[in-house]
Length: 373
Figure 1 (cartoon, rainbow, N blue to C red):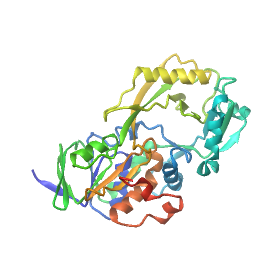
Figure 2 (cartoon, one colour):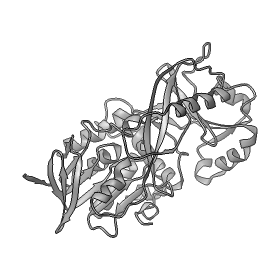
Figure 3 (cartoon, rainbow, N blue to C red):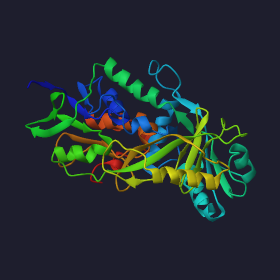
Figure 4 (cartoon, rainbow, N blue to C red):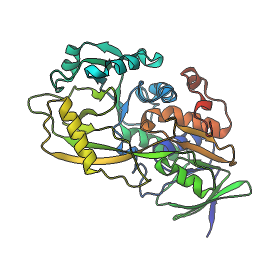
């Protein structure tokens, strides 16, 4: 079987793989190997798609801040429509959760993005909340919905315009180091490059195992979402993303209906995730307890895998024990909102460049997310 050679092979064409490949393609010959028939089938295509500067831990929040300008004002020609739409995030707390709310809004890199609001305003913003449930609230006006398709396909378009390739139906069957190159055996052919980027999402550790590289401990966690009808007589179009401060549930409007989630994190093997009936019921129960919603029908339910390292920070950088093996994994539920900055950081590290100054100015620290940290 013949073999094609490149400068960089990227494993996975979700938002992580597509974005880093697009950043690399102007300076390197890049091929993205995707096991599915289309890019973005797994976590990318199942995202709840919100940008929040307050979401995640400190390294994630820094990457989100550094991605904001790109998402709000993408480069000319990147997309055909805006990537964001106003939404806002409302963080709600019961009486027994007020300490958690106070601790959240006091975080130094959160305080500038959220404001405490009184209970009356919380009910005005989210009129479907059950009377007497909310004892405290905070609002993040800068949170926005993200056009997942527009962002993902914008990076894929840039990749192709720069001469990069996406090879679909290219399931990885072997990955071996031969001299100064990695040889990838796939169901679509053989490919070689001195550098391989592991952007395989839930399969990141499995890809590393094929390469004989020690696992990074990136664990897939299943999250469930469902679509239900809005409550009668309440206009929910302007309702913000509404999040329990302990993240026991969240909901937001979605095309005339409501998207609900129990914010579950159920350990899973890498797979084509499917919703569990118990998790669907849990979402309905938690949201019905907090709101006046009376769910009579679930129109659609789905699940996705959010993959985390033990410290819940991404894993990005060359593996110190495997020459040319680059990790780009563990984005958790933040892959969409961090992709612009994370892809630039990863591309700089792959190419041996310094961390871009604007990323560093937002607090992005490559050492904080390096493998084997």
